[in-house]
Amino acid sequence: MTDPNQPTDPAGGVPPQQPGGVPPQQPYSNVPPQQPYGQPAGQQPYAAAPAAPLDAAQDKQWAAFAHLGGILWILPSLIIWLVFKDRGRLTNQEAKEALNWQITWILAWVASQIIGVIIGSFTYGIGYLLFGLLIPWALYIVNLVFSILGFVRVNSGGTYRYPVNFRFIK
Image 1 (tube, rainbow, N blue to C red):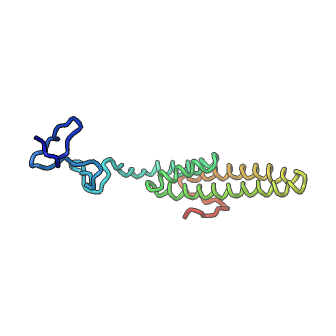
Image 2 (cartoon, rainbow, N blue to C red):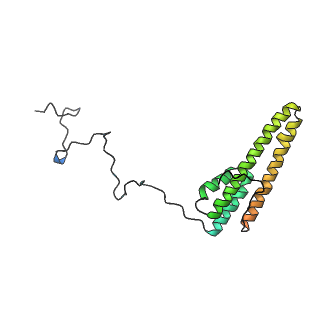
Image 3 (cartoon, one colour):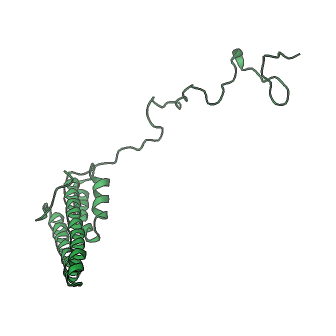
């Protein structure tokens, strides 16, 4: 005979009891999950180890590549700075300088486009020809020259500061 107060399983039988008379744990209870064996409390089970610092040659190489990447706009300098900023002092310094230059250069390029559209609407397109086409090409040539100068200077063992650069990232 079964007890009417004891829950039954769908097949009509009585659920088995665990040793010691403890009922099975119910799902979605307020009991926190158990830590894996040998795992300290509060640590992620598969936490990544910190990356090794760069040696002097690698530090110089990535610092120089951060400047050279400016030829392809902002993305290479940003990626190099985010990945290597904590691994090498020179890479952090030079990638930050290159990234600040790229931000400054892009703002100047966007401003020339906006001015070109505004002036072009009043001068029947002649202002757009100057501000929307010629000045952006000149800005790109300046970016190309400064990026190559930065690459050469850092690759030869020095540091490089762009002549006109707003320091957005300190």
